[in-house]
Image (cartoon, rainbow, N blue to C red; front, side, top):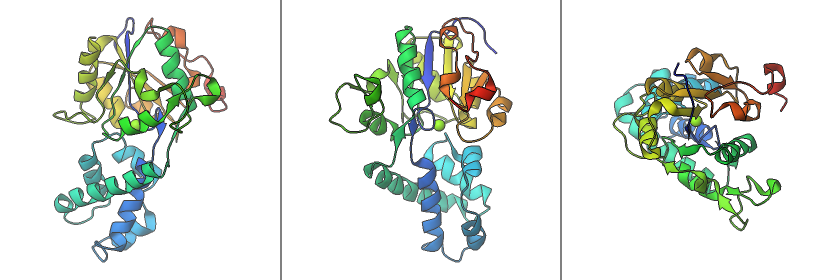
Length: 269
Ligand SMILES: [Mg+2]
């Protein structure tokens, strides 16, 4: 683990700031393919019976670029011809994702928005670094309203800045040589913030993202919203919380990643 002050914070978007419909789009598009174009392939009935669960999604798909995510699902379920099916699954997932986004099937995490605003107030440089090119469209629709009540509203008529406007650098969806768990995207974010990796903190909810932060020589704050914290701790996150409200904000610029609240209170905040 790197020590010393933190000057920049790099945010994953999906699952950290935005409750986005990626997992649902992966699940529904797989089910649709197995019921139509892929009907009758080896293992179809078995996969339809299980479905793409949240645990499978978090462990194998979350945070990865689209094609890698598709391939990971096909490999996990040992479905035949993954090389040719992965692009088809990725395209089908993207179509379903766009439908869900257009239908407004997403929201902001309130603790994520408060965390962004609090770090900005403390003078830290902020970057957004999602593998997904859809992240910008989502963040443009989330308003950082003039009042706490307005924060997180999606209606475009609300006054104030959008979440997208909070960042000093934005590399969401930018092509890099290798996606998470490789550090390329986070290193690009640090570079665009004008900071060395060692003074950057990555905020991530996915195993692949924590691994990417580690590989890039950055500290990692894990947000375990959906399940226990063991996975992100095992990946080497410097601190894991179930809500960003539990983080001691004033410690961050000093490089002290500590809880404000004890773990048993965490889940109730
Ligand atoms: Mg994520």
